[in-house]
Length: 206
Image (cartoon, one colour):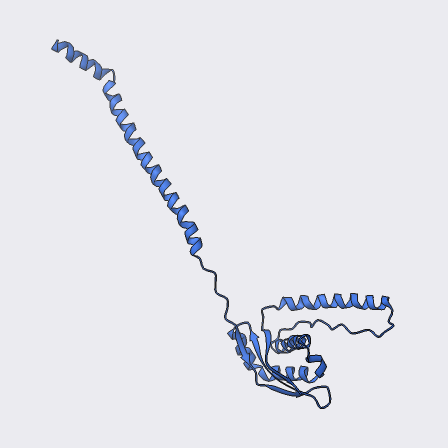
């Protein structure tokens, strides 16, 4: 019996049954390694996917640039109306500190340009809100011109005498719209450059 058992064991070894058992364990180990690797990779993607939205949510919007203003000495000028004058204080809003330094360097030229604009106005032209807004644009134009930045001023629509033919009025309006559009285009090109705004801090007509 003992010999028969030994012979059977030998035969089992020869036909490869034992190695098959070893290969089964090897495949089991490889499977576990792949499973762990896959699980680790899945966990990594999960954490990365979870992290990205949080990171995006944590991004804060960039703060707006702080406005910079250059205060000018008050202006007192005689208006085009006889016996009327304007006393006005203003500040120029500039794009950045470097522009502020440039304003200081050409300040006499800027003031001269502003004085010419103011003295050419009549009281009725600058007494309304619309007139003041137009004046602000003209002052901005004069200040920027001194800085080497130029744009076209939109024209003003003139009133037509009573009895003017409609065809003449229509043609004038069409030309006005065309010129106005071209002027707005030049203004858009320099938007955000040089003097970007004019603020009145005092405005007295006497």
